Image (cartoon, one colour):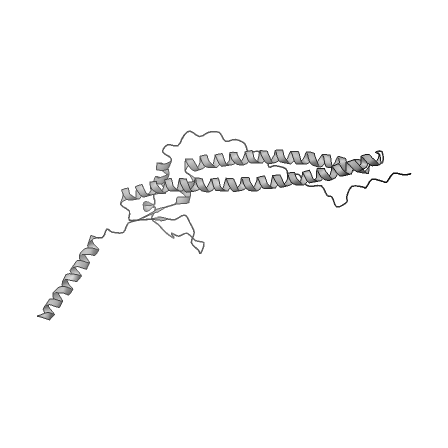
Length: 224
């Protein structure tokens, strides 16, 4: 009797397990190239255009700072020449020497200003790009999820990124299961008319601190 009961329990458990397996939905995979979707999203192109515009303005500001620095360099060189001139009085040469040292300090401060501006601007632009990328990827991901649900997918795999071995995470996928084109069509549905691209500005030309290995000539003492 006990043996019969145990057999019935095992049969019931097996039947329940088989029923649970049959009740699970069949696995349906879908692939998407998130990098391609991001790069070809019109909002990405708009954001990159604004980024290039901000970068251009920053270069123009750097160029203006460099021009100011070059003016200081020219003034410094003129003062150095004056401090060496035999046509000036010793007092005038001494004053020119002191003024040249002050001008050199101004040049070094200006160079630091340029360097700090470059670093801060670069950091700000990088942060701006990260915020843009995160927001747009969130939008694209929502579209991917909606399309995947509409197709009845149970799993979506991004085939864009490489693995630790430097190869694609998806070695093969049937194009029929790739929804990248559908994603692009959906996210670019409201794309505005394209505007003409602005020409990039030339790179800023840096100024350099003069070589001060040799100090300006000392003024000669007055002859009695």
